[in-house]
Image (cartoon, rainbow, N blue to C red; front, side, top):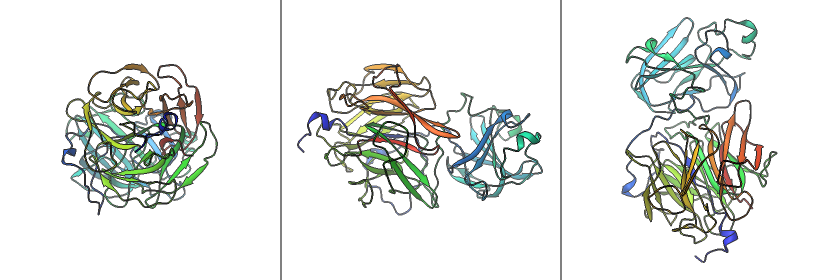
Length: 454
């Protein structure tokens, strides 16, 4: 393919670094990926125990004195009955009922970590192993009373809610021996504010996402009835979307790129290791191809500088994570394969120096939640970072893009906020300064994407 002029070629997009997903393969999908996609390990990343929107929540004693958990009122308070899912994989320790707790489930996650889910309407599991994001029951209002302070209790618009507890240092087989921890303030667990999503059949559950490099914001919103919506904007500012359409199903991970080199970014989805890349923003029915494993992070970039974006994956292993980058949108295998980063890092990609890097237009980097640092490389091979700096906080989702059209991709973060639209903080430099663009857009359960949509 003839390369585009550099100014146009620069806007290729989106790695979606989406997190660690635990999976059962989607029914009816045949994965054509190469044999190198075997997965080495599963990592202790917990997610919120639901996939619906949140009408109300409160944490520990913010709810009332002596409250050792988090209360979530899910979806539409007038209907209740939303899905409750496992925050992490483990073994069902107890399925029981108690006067105050109502119907509840306890899951043992190993390493002294346990979680409990109270006031359920009914159970879906009774024993055995469960995967992170697997449906285990339905929100209800069994048990009670739920609150010992009537003025504070008035915030419960409906009795239907989920009381969710996390404990550490629990002796195996003894939930009561553990120490309650607040997942919103404890560093014991690595949490994300992105809820998992759930379809009627087995599926994978993205924990978080990162996208870039792009131009403008967009969000991918899982909805009920196994459907999704994309809401895209033509400016880095708050306000209404400019383009909305459906594409994909609830369990998909959104990806974005200029798949055909025409200078316009269009959408796609990554479905448990199978890629569906659309040539238009709205409509379309692309054929899928396999590349990677369902528990990898998908990434997208113009790795060889030919003007079109192609696929790749970032894989946590027993040692240093690995990037596998393909110069074709097919299952032919990786042209670039190398280790970079630490366990639990999130991948990002971009043209960090505006020259196309050493081995390709787009090169890689990682965001390290433990330190809220970006580690960026100007070449697609093993070795250290070209530069490192702090930006954002550990629970933010990293995003990248050429926000000011100067030919250099820079970083940003997407920050979900309970009770408000998520914050976008975009920096025009790859350093700790900024943000140069600071605005709100989207909803709590959205996945951020960036692209040059027109």
